[in-house]
Image 1 (cartoon, rainbow, N blue to C red):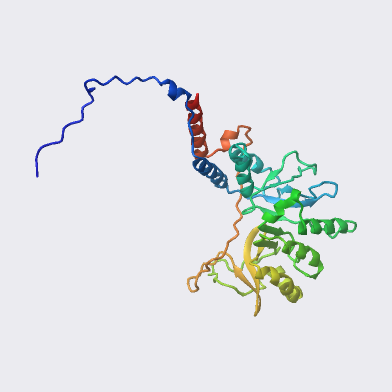
Image 2 (tube, rainbow, N blue to C red):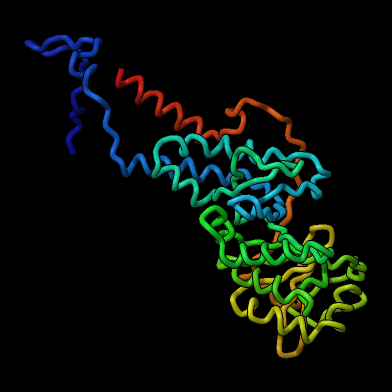
Length: 338
């Protein structure tokens, strides 16, 4: 092996070489900076992915108005948050406005993950902007009434939900339905259930079970579907005893299509319900025993609570670090063209 060291690089200019100027040449100033369109679309996809960084779900009431072309509207349900505004629309708009304003194609890319829907204000008036929805986490409460004189509105709502127009095509994206009554899936709601069954992407139905007696505190909770303990879930037991056969008949087609049914108390899911050959069984969420095999491949429904959001009219407050970095990079490209 030779012990001769390689020559050290020299920064001295070679003979006959011209010194390099620090100023831009004329061609460098006039030539535009070209970015491959595939790279541009990947940047837009990264911006759209950042929309999902904010994981706060929103509850939407589905409303019906006959005198509007939209027919079906969404109205924010604020009961879970103490009737305070969640600022969800401000945040979703801030995080999606950059890719939405580039061109038609990028706007369509945003609308695929944030479908728009006609919205009602809290006073019932039609909002001047459409709502941004997150169908993967947002819950939708269907219009439901048995009050005298409003049956016609219920029938029209079911028809609009079954045969949506282009103005309310967002119903095709609904994945999560929340029912406010524990006796909703019975014989008295045949038409209403038939309308919900037409939703092509429906995955979860959550219904209130009203009352739960905590018999499992300090005791292990077993995994898997088992016979429902009616002492722990008295209202659910009443539903099974009175409407058990009807319940199986109504929900079985939806269950065969992959729809999961959860029983909740005050918006917090507690038990998953399904019909089996042995009858109606339940799987308690949050099982912790060590003697059973944990449930696999089961989608848990998680309800998150909101922090108090301070209203801020500065949209950059809701931008993520990646969005700010990309905006700075785009600014450098624009500066290079000048």
